[in-house]
Image (cartoon, rainbow, N blue to C red; front, side, top):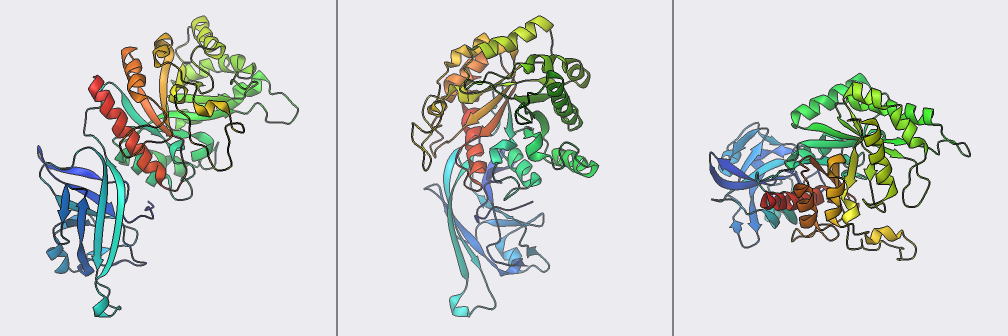
Length: 430
């Protein structure tokens, strides 16, 4: 497990209960020093949350090494330590708890440093962070997951597998989506030890594998076209690995031949050669409908034709909600409207179009780019999108796929905001 650089951690911000009563809230904070220390050196933490909470340093309780203590109990303790690699859980009493939404959490943490002159003690660490408190229950008709793609480029740099899965579970999600070549070390042959770790972590965080992302790299060799047989071999390799890791859906990213994402013609035969194996493994192959391809498009028609012609239950559609984007993504440094793809301004598919393909849709990637402190998405119109999904009878996973600014750790808070937003809307629609 890795910790965020900020003192206040994104995960672990929640209300706490005593039976049916909400008695307070808690958050996690990492040790601000360069070393761990005896817990008796903690002089407390003052906490403010907007105009809702303002408590002095001696009020919150502390959970360290699995046990909860008052500040006075920490002062009298022996052998209790706040280790450098452990986030302490701070609990603030507050009858009824905090309301759902984004809060500005401010802390003033005090530690006694024995090697610093007493007139300069205690050492005080102040931090403020906007952090989302998600809803409890009220999930509506959908299930909720997260794609680990949301955490690129954090993954492998400031997040490891366990930290990423812990962040997923902390949103209240139950499903996790991965990219085979992005998240499986030793791909396509992970070690038995890694596979054991994968399932152990899924059990620890009560998560189930949902969708596995794979590629059919049709431009694998310069100047040489990939054959349908080779495409099928690539797909079947990933079907087998996905099955070993417990996934029920496989999204093949098939090489393209046009700017509106028409797949290489080998896709049909490659998929058909693989349907028997998919059936044997209990896996559904589901290419994504991704901007700039709308729902009403020959690519979608061709996918549906394969389903109707073969009668297969092992091929379906994956809808990427980026197709519903109706406002532009802000320009990045060096970009102009003329130099970047036009679809980044949004293709604005009418959510009502979902009804036309709903019976073929097996999975939804909940693509988004930025949700502000008022829990308003800046690009995706979630209320009409979720209403269209619900009215069409879709009750499967909404799997968060954050594709916004890649500042380290920003993705964790953005995913929390999205889950708070879409779960609230879904509960209102139920």
